[in-house]
Image (cartoon, rainbow, N blue to C red; front, side, top):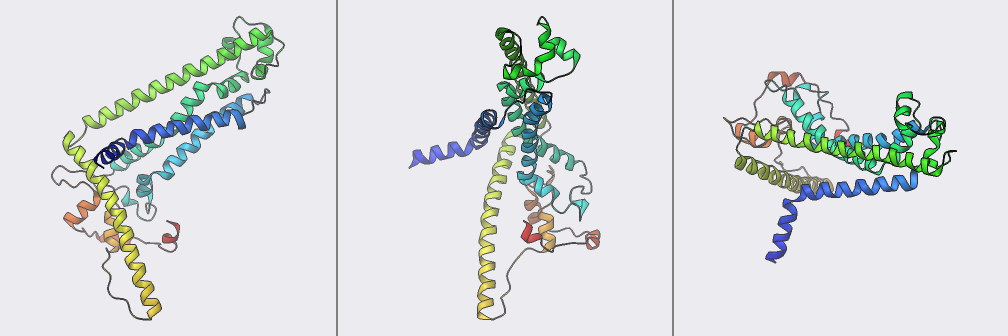
Length: 309
């Protein structure tokens, strides 16, 4: 039993690495599936558009999904049109851009994986580059090759050129090599940029390494217990309402946070050394609600909100 708990704890501690590894395997599998099943280079003047669409369109979709599935992004933008001060609170206007940067960087992981895998494979790049009309690019690609290379480069991916098979294969290998070089350059650049941003964030940290570790543990535990508490109170409230409905009686008072408390607990969190609050909820519990007269002027549109969550 102890051994099982130890293994479980190890996997829980390494869930970020496991998640990225799973994402990488899923990206590789998806790219191979696209290449074998969906991708068919037209070997015409449409090669450039066709190849670039298969190269960048999935990356764009993954970026949008990254934003959409990021809980921090949903928290950041929920209600911001009704009350812009949620994302630009007094004294912390720049914090919005810091959080948005974090969301963007985390959402870029999957698109960067896709681009890296697609470039390392070389199929999409080969098709796109074989359809180029740029005289400069044609000069680089067809340097030392017969005139047919200039006229029939778009047919290279299909092997239908009038050039010798060895020249055709050499061109294909050259284009694939260029794609793989770009892929490794992208991987190295992304890794170096990730290292720089991580080191800079740690360098600018307002807390020590131990306190930061405690902060992460607290945030994770608070999130887990908050979800459990949501479920518990939702069950109790729904049970009370159904019971009162079918028994045709008035409900007893049910303790719930006020609307102002929900709003305050949903704000962006900013750490202060003088007041060591590890989350917005922690701040609300410790300091209570600070009423702002401007809040009374906010128009709230709640119709249908609960059904759209």
